[in-house]
Image (cartoon, rainbow, N blue to C red):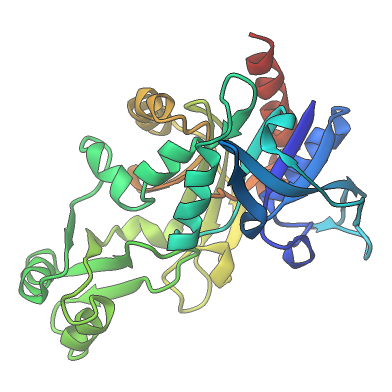
Length: 322
């Protein structure tokens, strides 16, 4: 197969951490051709999605004492060609959030890939439907107490009632802009005003889960089924466990509650064409559904001695054979 990855510039990727690289390595190991492109290299001509594509050869990472180790020149690129994306058997949309207007335009371009010829993961329609904060709200049996509002009075009343809360920008990523709110904090008004752009932009506010100090569990779902998990634990005075803000990672089991939540999500994810997904769980509650470029595979592979990328490629091969 020919597998194309829509990624951020490859020289910016961290081969020892980024899930996109793990998936590319798995595709190469399975004998597939690996190609890369970038969102800004896509377009439409004569009703077809087009892209500037480059073949890439990877030098796989090796396992060090407590991390994956990459050589300095871990990839080499072939000649760039301009051709229809439908030449590819699979296109994996792995551009990092935030979901900006240009990101949305990219999903519109991907609508012009013939799904009978090429599998696009995740579905462009699904990516547009699934804001990574708002999408979780439909699973009322899985989420903690949550509101979405830009109204300062509503948010203040909610924090007063709950005592403590977590505020999240709806378009944020990697823990950016997440705030801990506490009743009586003299900065509370200002934090709400800044986060909502003085009421012009809604935010998500969730009740604070004390279990957050023990970790924020990332579970990778493949076609709705949990295939691996990693716990991201806050360090120092930081209340966020995101790896991007210094959270440490640890092995963690997939519990019966995790499987129950996954079962609630699975039919909706399948309906929306969201095949490769990361869900975040704190204290047995679903807090986010990550669909743009879920991460965590490298950490799970290292901690559990598995190869999730290999599982993803096996699923794709089976899907394409149908």
